[in-house]
Image (cartoon, rainbow, N blue to C red; front, top):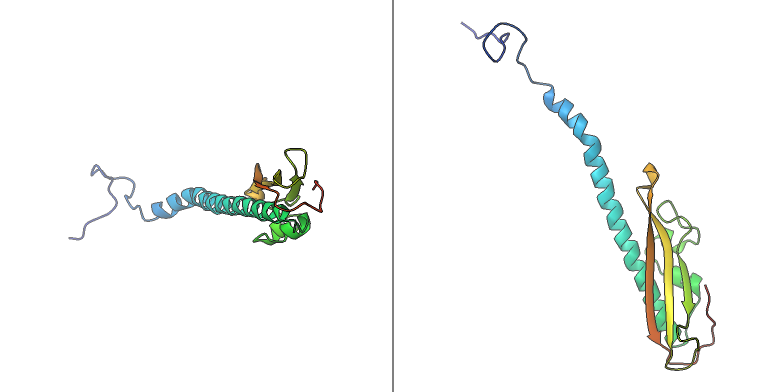
Length: 154
């Protein structure tokens, strides 16, 4: 005689014990959290890439300034990996773009004095959810090797 499936777990007659749709419901409940986690991972990766680029742009600028071949902030910004870094207006993750500024920490620009290049911006994590603003900062300092023909500023 075939076994009937209309009994409860405790063996008494009642509701059917079929669990065939439970996995789909559980997956639907967990999916938003999994997607949010994936978006956060990719955004943190993008943030660290932008942070690395900001430091590299500052280091390149400081080296160029030290040997008096400083091309200006727009030319340095164009060395970024992404269009958001290269653009003066930025994009969804980097509104306002990145600014590149040069100064002389010792107050003078003689050979042997330091020259400093700073890059700053604001990174938005997960901009589709309103975004959390995180400061983006890079800095490099080197000693001047040739008398500069440029002045401090952004």
